[in-house]
Amino acid sequence: MTVSPSLAELQAAGFPMGGEPNLALDLVDTELLAVDPPVDLLTEGAQAWWGLQEPRLPAGPVPDLAATRRLRAALREVFTAAIEHRRPEAAALEDLNAIATSVPTSIRLERDGTGSWRSERRWHAEHGGNARLAAIAEDAISVLANSERAERLRRCASPTCSMLFVAENARRQWCAANICGNRARVARHYERTHRSAEA
Image (tube, rainbow, N blue to C red; front, side, top):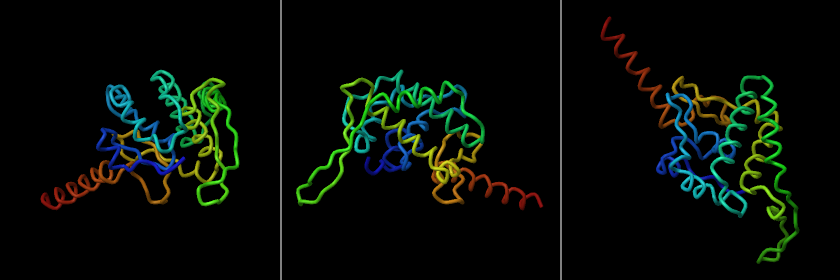
């Protein structure tokens, strides 16, 4: 997998959050749960999302929406369980593991154009499953199986946001500084100026 799309690219395409190093978190953040009713950003924007994520995915067809939503729900549950230090629902864990193992992989040694050796991972979708969903499930497992990264899983500090992220910086509280972080700064400023005006 390669570099993730930037937050600016995702926001321009209608996704308020994303650009995380972990593709699994970008998928989870395509659903806004802190609004009523919840908003599924993949309903209208699935092609745009998959297109932006293309460089860091294995080759293969775009997964159908139902399978994508099933994986996203499993990811949300296991990530939330890790954040809350509880066991995830068994069905979510089962779905995640089944999707991760649905496409076998192999490592091959290849020589690049400069004569240097490199390893290349091949996804064998001819045996069933969807390589893109399997790669995302594997990415989630890599986050959760790494205790240091799992401990840095966070939910945005804004009560009106449901986005998840791995806090690379221990001080990070907000999903995106230009959305929830900015709203918090504006609210603090309003509170300070409003309090001083009343005094």
